[in-house]
Length: 435
Image 1 (cartoon, one colour):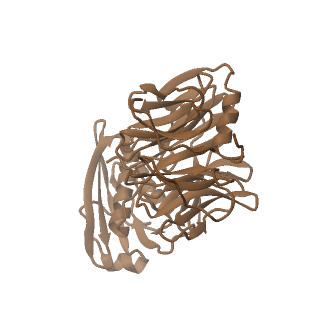
Image 2: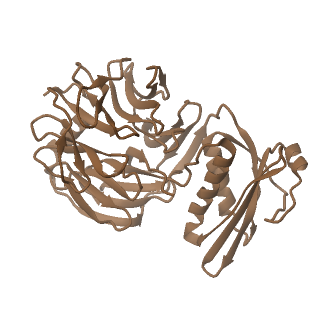
Image 3: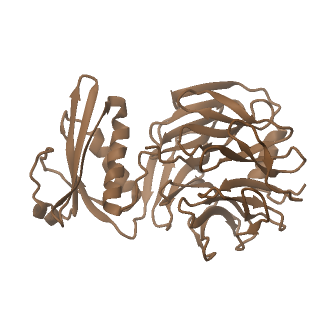
């Protein structure tokens, strides 16, 4: 068995399996707020195009949370330049002076109201194009006070899409593993890192979380039984069940686009190889046979193929194979170490971790041409994951000696750092659109 994927997923998994005989404590904690402080967002860079927009304070109950969240969402994207709306008094029925707002520098203006009736809130908003003197959007949402953050994200998504033509991802969620002094936590949070919730706690390692295509379930690997076992957990209820618990290592789950099957990695025959299996644990099928390690499979968006990491060529590189089995095709040729592949939602690009001059960096490659772009500088950037609209990439990073979640735009221009006050953040994955 080769150890050439020295710093990659496979060897980390073997190392954890070797020490997994320690005692453990497992607690399922559905919806439990995370104990550590919420994540702080630092932003650098701007997009190639920035849209000047003003977000006025919302009238009504005096709630300031909604416009603040919308402003923060649009700012984080790097594609909007926020114009001050200070001194403006607008309600939902106001007549907008488009020329006045254009004179302020705002091509677009969003405003609205928040009203309360008992425990129910109604958030109404309008979006106008000042240059064209036209209304672009008008909608109302209702919910409880606890749902105001999600409503705000949905409004930001609508603004983003109406102006850019691309669906927004502010109301999506992310998942990641947090290693603390007490063990490991599988957490989910809003895409901005806020509102973290603990889905699972364990004394032993939790690795490789993967969202189901409908966002209702997570597959992951837990070492709680003394060896790596693949589980699927329903987020709404906390109910979970083992899907793969074969002899040896069970690792690297990845969902098919229809949510019916998983690609997984098993060492039941002595070396890590790729299989597919139904989400209920039935109908295990081996994809191919290789004399060396095959790991980290991911379905392509059409579900027809898998991309994966293998050292079959002497060092870890990324390959592609039909999901039903067949001959593998090598995809990466730049550098001697390329791992952790993910295909963009539109199928045009590949993102992965590459090692250059001793630094682990995030790179993308155009699948049609093989052209590569390095997006990050390292020194230790890992586990890239595309946003569901394909415009950003989430990854884990060591920056200033601190373990953080980070986001980069796919052109590398805009970067975000979501920093936590305690713990090591690992293996992030961006969830799908859910409505």
